[in-house]
Amino acid sequence: MQLVVGRIGRAHGVLGEATIEVRTDDADLRFAVGNKLTLDNGQQLIIKSARWHNQVLLLTFDGITDRNQIEELRDQLISAQVDFNSLAPGEYHYQQLIGSQVYLVSGELIGVVGEIVKLPGQDLLSVDKDGKEVLVPMVKQIIVSIDVDQKRIVIDPPEGLLDVAL
Image 1 (cartoon, rainbow, N blue to C red):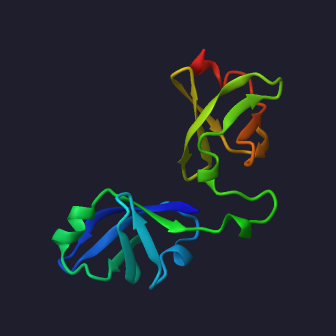
Image 2 (tube, rainbow, N blue to C red):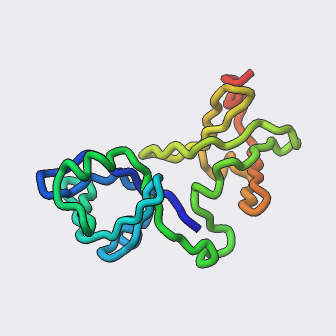
């Protein structure tokens, strides 16, 4: 399955190097030299070089030799082939949670996960509840269960957490 692992940012220098907004927890594996990546438009890129500079990932690709070519690719999401079968039981990729229905332990439907908000302290489920965004911390004190196959998440939020959507 294709999994979004990053986004192409601005060009770095004049020789076709791109800054990458990393959207994976295993950047060294996903962005290894020789790996194939797929853009939004279906174009395939092969990583020619990868290096970190001031905590920013910089990549070059086969066939791309100047900053103008990178600027044409700017803001495109990049995907890599990921084998979900290699995950241990109970493990999942965040992107597998997108579209999951979120329920209270009582069985009441709260809404649907639209995205995962990654923050330094903790990650949040962004849940669409009747057109309003509810942010649910991804902590074991709140998340009761996650069933990736059924796309179902059960939560037990503290009082007031869902008030924004009332």
